[in-house]
Image (tube, rainbow, N blue to C red; front, side, top):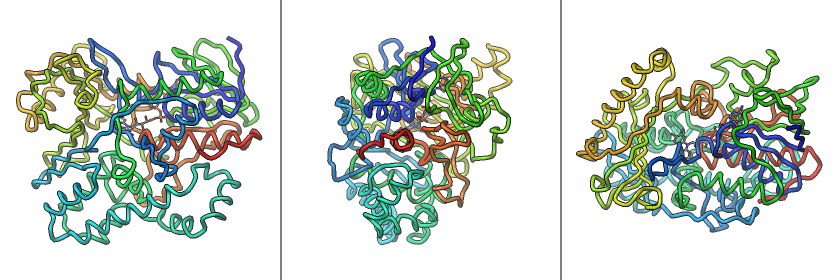
Length: 503
Ligand SMILES: Cc1cc2nc3c(=O)[nH]c(=O)nc-3n(C[C@H](O)[C@H](O)[C@H](O)COP(=O)(O)OP(=O)(O)OC[C@H]3O[C@@H](n4cnc5c(N)ncnc54)[C@H](O)[C@@H]3O)c2cc1C
């Protein structure tokens, strides 16, 4: 192939694509390399038998067109900068929780409607509930008034601190606090605290005590401000649009192209080697892979190795992509649900069931009279590894596990099993293989008690090698990796002498 570019990006997840699009728009040349045939990674779509399935994400922040919501409104700002439109549909309910102890709470876009439902269930905690969510809003207020940039860019840090000293100081103090400790300051009801654990677990896959207040402030406040949206045509519309932006400004995105090695000379990244042996040279390399894949697979020098427990490794997923008869879903059913039937095991593999039925919002993603039904639970690679050795045992185990999950979901949707006309079942092994994610992990997380700023940033131990995606600050979630892409691009653009304008 013999390509070279200013920046080569390994992986077309949202973190990598965001960085590539912003750098390309700024005038740098970029080549993005993706092992799959489509972009987006955990935010891609795939089609089967007339259904469009979301490979992972389906709850999207960052699409409000209201500028008041500042840097958190990142998708909208980036697409405006690229001159690309991504039509979206507002989702009036972020998640409908179905939890033990009669905790049945839909999280409405309208905050007061959501709070009324919660207060009705926990009337004695009204003051605490209001104060807790107000505290989250105060974090959001600070973050949404500061421009997005790299925490490793001294010029950015000095300029933000100079322009907003009191906000930066207040935010710095909040980085030491967890969502769980903050909640305990305001409320004491044990079931309500469990609800707050689920509010964290729903996106962080960690309880509230392990979840930084700053991350919680974004997710749990912005859903009532910027709101939740679904891209018309499925989650893949977002990475497709980013690829469109990259190409519009002259960049390249190459599919079915896997990187096998990051080339390093004297501690400095100089390009990548593809699995077919070809080399692409670059002034900077961005890895959109997980920190374990970057350090232990793509970097060949053993000095860069990291252990499995260098960061908290989030679990993987067992996923069911189903096509179901529409008659099974009540008209007023919400799109996203979280179902827990026993508090004891909610954070164990399979304990919490996530459901998403996006065709309720966007009928184009399913054939007429049918719905797309995505159900998933956390899972561990280890329990599937040996089964894989015998194909029939692996397939049988997948089917048997899916049957137990469907039976549990039938508590919400009676008759579901008979309504399934198509099923695609994916284990952690699938997740690992499809996305090149070590152990199929949801990503690197902080250990409880760590400061959110201890999350890896965009620079790495190798000069000119940068990282974007959910192994970097701020963490998992499409809007979070978008932020990491913005900060990665800012960091590189400054280093290469042509800094980005603020979005
Ligand atoms: C089941 C599930 C549900 C989720 N739901 C939501 C949700 O509702 N809302 C939300 O905001 N977030 C959700 N998330 C999280 C969100 O999807 C991810 O945090 C985010 O998309 C990760 O983006 P990333 O940039 O880190 O890269 P990834 O999505 O991991 O993409 C990395 C890309 O790099 C490619 N790649 C890796 N190595 C190589 C290589 N060597 N050569 C070439 N290509 C390579 C991979 O194929 C992949 O396409 C969900 C995730 C999952 C798994």
